[in-house]
Length: 142
Image (cartoon, rainbow, N blue to C red; front, side, top):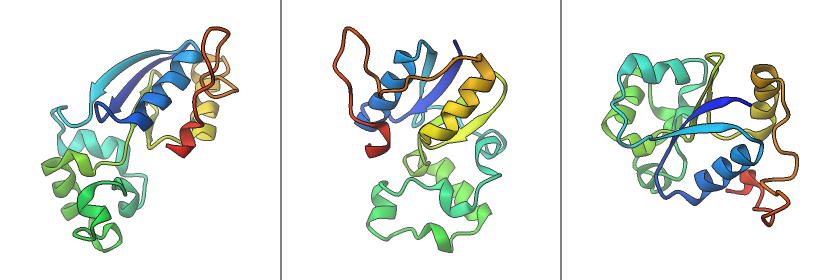
């Protein structure tokens, strides 16, 4: 099974469902607070640089949702400054796999492909269901 570093917003129900899905697949999670982690520009860009700047932002963050920040109108330098100043703006979760792969947001299909490569095992196929627990909602609905 894979060891996964999972940066979350503590208390987020969507992140809880995503973690349950991964743990149901037998993966070992090291969970870290996205909001309290001591981010630097260089480290955060390890996750973000391959994505368009607008995809760096959490669309549910109050400043984005309320129109105070328009991710499509922000340049990369200003964007990284905003994210470092207010980590709640960072799209989550941030996921680090043991092969060095960095993923932004929860994309089940992409994560499943990476897990197959890293751990050579399948991720859960039915949400986070197991013989001892009821299925949880699909993490994409979170």
